[in-house]
Amino acid sequence: MTVKDNIQCSKSHEYVYEENGKYYIGLTDYAIEQLGDIVFVELPEVGSSFAKGEIFGTVESVKAASEIYMPISGYVTDINEELIEKPELLNETPFDEAWLIKVVSESYEEDIRDMADYNTYKEEVE
Figure (cartoon, rainbow, N blue to C red):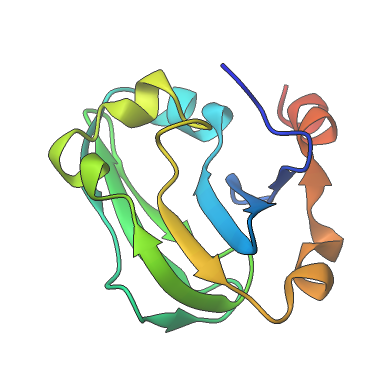
């Protein structure tokens, strides 16, 4: 599993990192472990806008359903279509191919102030 150096994690177990001017958002490996085998993912439409903390999607596993919260404010430029067909990719590679959405954000620096880098996040959840 590859974890980006610039990844930030929220208290609600979403991650965000910047690459080529876009912000990738997904679920942390800890969240995936807690959910178990993922069987369904619901993602927003491209062009949707969300404020930090708003629900933007749902993930269902064999154990439970869970809402997914925006770690930063922004509008959706891309969704990971492959996850709709193969939600189990989340269990295999949460940080690589299994990002959920890409967004453009004007408030990233401000929005990540209450987030933790990955190593700090892992220490907090273990």
